[in-house]
Image 1 (cartoon, one colour):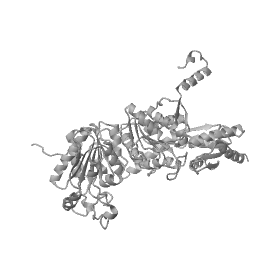
Image 2 (tube, rainbow over the protein chains, first blue to last red):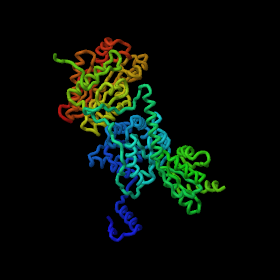
Image 3 (tube, one colour):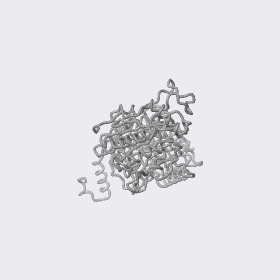
Image 4 (cartoon, rainbow over the protein chains, first blue to last red):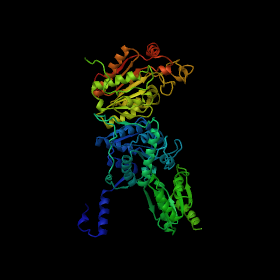
Length: 378
Length: 248
């Protein structure tokens, strides 16, 4: 504990004590490393991956650290190999992870669909990059649809978490493992090179204490007990329909219980800027510029992209009356925003296709906000 | 009365869905025999592939993970790394292992994963209706090679057992057939030997089993067996191609 333990007596002092305590524990790390550290803190000891920019810090970190913890690190022959190693390890009940970036995530979609179908937990970190095709390595939000609308075949969903800081790269990775075990589902952390490559202060919080269901379903060798089978094939009359209704019911529970969002200055806002991930980080500065200029502008940031925080967004949008969605693509999340806020709210969109030089600055977003705000005031 | 023959403990007492004359039932039995012999049924995790062998869990009384098409060696890698004390085998067909799954099998083998792979080569895609496989013989007519496999355009059939024998991580690689009682007995011995490598933690073991698909070959079971002897074995010679005598 810090040395001021004996002198800090008031509530304010106690807050200072807490702050100083955290200060002493702070690390200065890259977002990708923070995610890898969060995985280890969450109990993940199995990692399977393949090199791709801008996420290679994650396998590099884990190739160094997992052997020290008696874990397993495999650099797989492909993204397809890696996701299927994750499938196999997860079927055995251990916490396991893979990571990649957009083109590699496309290759993993087959395995993600199988894991969703077989109800296997697992964490997939996507430090996405711009496309289509080989595209570029720049910050991008063009894989929103792929992440939240299923990605692979078969009409499934997986929880998608969108960190906007190094701290969240760490905290949300731990949360992803809990969601995966809670709902027996793959979970994706969707970032980009901004949150993956930047360095910030990180408080390495302890793993959250969440009561999770047991894993009686895992394969282990039947050992005299009942046979256990992990599969996604359902051929019997009505079996697959029932299975899909079961999955659908899980998504409904997630929508009720697992939405996370963050709001800044929304109480009196007349324009609600809505953005996620790295763009929300830039938008937060733009909103601060707007406030300095006397404009009543707030920021709504979905942290979970699936389940999408429909209710919280509808409330904040209802208060403001006008929404400006900002994305680093030509319009993807904006569709979910429109569905959430309903027909009575004016929703406008500012987006740019990702690529070198297309990441907007806070000042550029401030100019967009000023125009939209002027319309809101008319 | 002394019982001299019975169903292996590792097989369920059920009828299979396999076609008349299909060798999957025979091969299932040989694999189950080997599991029984090593006493590993209770700690075995089988990895099923996509094809007629997908119903592994319906016939084997063991824990099973179903893998996507061709990915069984990668899934088995994850299983074995997560549970190193378990006994892990994959059971894959020729389309699964030698076409869509070539990357997974070659790299699992090259890493020397401590698993056993049973590779059923019947020179065709059985479940999807008899299309050309990577092992279809030159000249063989299938539903997607109606004029016969053309070596100039389709390439030559892949000899997986020989190919894998070249890799450093492979401890045991062999090819057997189940077209005659003599070959079945030899296959039984070789499959046991392969499982023995895993039982001793000696690395990757692989057995290719030449088998019949009378339905898609358009022949009766006896004619299918005769074809294996007359046409398939001459191209896919039986034998042990690699056998590490000392642990890798």
